[in-house]
Length: 435
Ligand code: EPZ
Image (tube, rainbow, N blue to C red; front, top):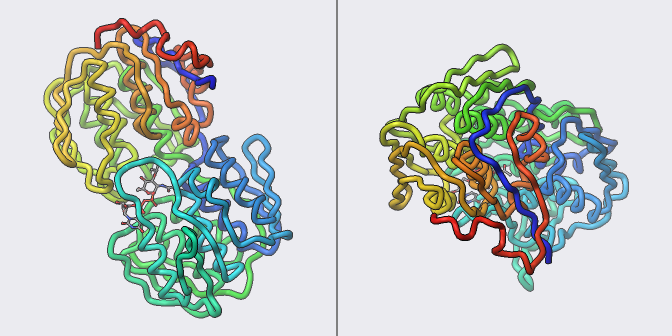
């Protein structure tokens, strides 16, 4: 079978302006939530990603009509007829579990299997299921499927043991059409949760406190359809800033929400990057030499996001001095490190801690993306490396970046995406390079 690879020529300074894509982690739950509405929903600023197409497939399988054209998704819930998500669609991404809350809210039943997504260590869904039980849902396992039914879906007081993003979203979506009030404490505060709540409130829901630790949802009888523009993708925005920090040059990102990115921008500043912010624009001047950042700890929002950890790892690989990162959200999110070592980086990982000793330069290598953000980090590192890199595992990148190569090239980078056949595997021209 043919595999696609990305050849990245390192050392090209990035210059220019791009508009940042809509947020994957907001578009996906909002697409699922549209099933709660009685009328048509039109979403704008929807990124063209394989995860978005997977969400569209699930909606169509359930009997709704979802059409994606350019950056808009039109979702008509009229024909909803099935309460079961096929296993293949569940495995396609983590966000398949985002249909649990809306299906229970709308149909009072949902049959699903364990979701897929990036392998970052154990990613159970126990918090989602426990919360649904507290709202009156009976859950049993049958032939490898999780069968959820609710005779009476009701509000509840739900204290989350950890502020899980997905569980917070599922609880909100199940609660909007449930009887009575739901009070969720220790809720996740990510901006994508506020975006989901803003969408639902526009449809007639009564949600307050989204984006804070306590969220209150008063159930309503029904929701109507609406038009809504998905928020900008803060992780994609940070990716392009890191690409410029690695490669040098000056870029401007428009259509961003800088206030959602404060913790990650402050780390780039600490690493010596000059940043300018003007309303929805972020400028980065990558002309300065990079310096180490003593200690970075990934945390739920508003802390430094785990989704940007791999990206900052790539940046700090060539910073002067020693940096330390502690990953507190996921158990195993350092798969990019082995690949950065192939490029000449000096990084030691012990448990959840990575110690990065900056080297003067990285060199091009044969690389494989092991997960979405790790793959993006490798592309950033390759942009700043000497010589050419070949990146495989592009299906990961396609799950989260709307045409990565085209955007990179529009900033003056050189990345060429090509298909190689099975007989060419291992013959990318770099295999003799000493790594
Ligand atoms: C969301 O995943 C994002 N995905 C992730 O982005 C992001 O890394 C993560 O939040 C943290 O910010 C989407 O929004 C689609 P969690 P989610 O539930 O909801 C544990 C990307 O690259 N946990 O907040 O799955 C879990 O194991 C992706 O775009 C349980 O123990 O994350 C983890 O250690 C990758 N039981 C921690 O909580 C549960 O039932 C946080 O996970 C749920 C979670």
